Image 1 (spheres, rainbow over the protein chains, first blue to last red):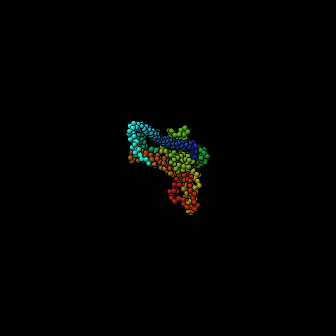
Image 2 (image 1 turned 90 degrees about the vertical axis):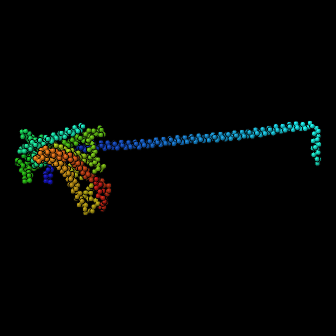
Image 3 (image 1 turned 180 degrees about the vertical axis):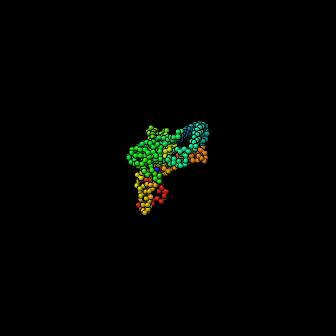
Length: 166
Length: 395
């Protein structure tokens, strides 16, 4: 301890204190402050760049999601349109079929009525023809019958015989 | 391939060095009768090591004896600045002619100075030389305030200027580029290391900024000076107790000045303990904060670095002390291997001590500025049941 105290040099202590004070002051002013500021600035810059990249990534993802959504929407719209078209097609076909059928039915009905009226007319004509034919035949028969006088008289007699006077 | 060539060259150089040294040792062995300043005996080695770990007034690199038998010292003198009884006196240390035994008297400004074991004494009026008492203390001389540019002060100045140059050039680089190049690229991770591993975790994210300047200055100051001490230039700055004391007192002043209400509260009137124990705790805390903490800081650094220097020099001295037992080549090889091994460890210690000093300084500052987000109850019920929680609060 005695030697330690003896070795302690007050002059060196003072010099060291003064030099260290000056050194700390100069180092802080000319070295540490600008260095630490630049380091902090740089680190903040790096952090900012990283954050910006992260943000850009997120935005990109959002954009992609949006695109995906749009695409999905377009796809579903197309799907719906196709479906509609298909429906319209089936409906049109069905409608056409329906119309054709009703038209055909109508035509059939018309044809049937026409046939009916034709038939009636034909029947009526036939009846007329049959009647006139019958009349002719009857006329001829009557003529023929009336040409034979004896027979006529006989028939009149017979008829008279049958007809009892009441 | 190139690398292998380099290692071959390196080891070749090492071995040639080894043989040169051992041949010198051999030569010294042959001239043992000579009574000069050569270091040959164990006592001389001990004195030499003692001399080395102390501060010196001149920058001495190497000494040798030339063909004419004269001792030649290679180095350069440093200015001596003394505040003695007759005011400020300045002269160059070369006026002592490398004498450290108090024999050469320098008369300046009406005062007479001698250099005794690296310390400058001012002789009393009428004294022609130093007179010692039984314990080898000088009786007729006083020590003036020695503000000389000693070897340590010179080292401090050189390292201070180097640090200023390196780090301010790094700071300037940031004006033009965001990532430094060249040597700045080496310094930047060290700065970030001190900030992220020492300042931030110990002081806290919010307040670290104010103290980082001091912590970084101290860290690089100690580390570079520790490393400088491992060079053959013979600096031992961080092994000077005055230097480590100044550093520790800086830390003491900073954490005392920045201590907040909680810090003083915990120190002077510890909440959560019975009233009667509080004064006792206050005494213990005060002793801890003002004596033990700075003392541990200054002694740890001083002792580690001094011990490292003594060990390395002692291992180098094996070359001389074991020369008789295992031949000069053997002793040189042994001392070389051991000194190399310890030097590698010392490089680690150089960093470690700088780290520990800075880390503890940051820890003490962190304890002084720590925010306690809870209010202590006035009736003294313990806030923490777990000692680990209390510790975690401080860290």
